Image (tube, rainbow, N blue to C red; front, side):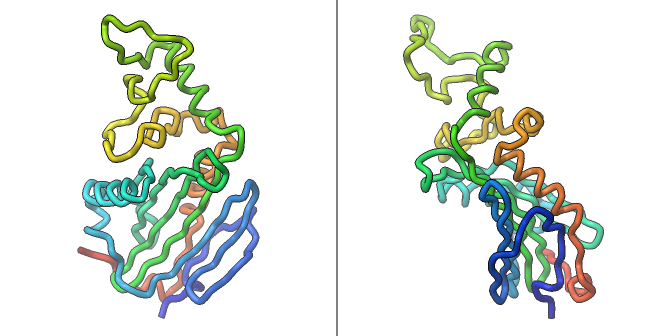
Length: 227
């Protein structure tokens, strides 16, 4: 029977801080948290991993209900299993501002699943990445204010992000507020300019994790997830 011992991956930079029957938790720098959860029951995914459109729709709906935003979802074809890589963005209520980015790699099997998750909080000053990228794109002309013909922008007025054409990334979920929605600054092309940003850290961790995942013999023999 598979267990936590059946799945290993690179935990460099993290220290084990807590362990339960079906979960382990590691702490890293910048208050980042890495965890591994084992669920000894059939996955609740709505469809096979090949149907990423249906899975994305389901995940986006669940995220919106929770007040979160889905940024990325992709199927991974690992050497010995298929997996699902997801990144969410959510408000950081405890600190009074900023965002928390949660990245996960789910490995579903017919009768069980594993979830590797990394949680990266934003630290003050908040919103630096968004502000710099927004300014760059406005200056380059890639973004435009959506104003009526007879309205002149007031430099002292705060313009809603939903009134900046091209800032929010399609498809735009009307259930997610503009300040939390997927926007242009979330694009991976900006990661190098913001190496310590929590979204950059999340992607960096997930890249390392997915390349180092190793399945034990018992897990490699487990029936695959199909629906």
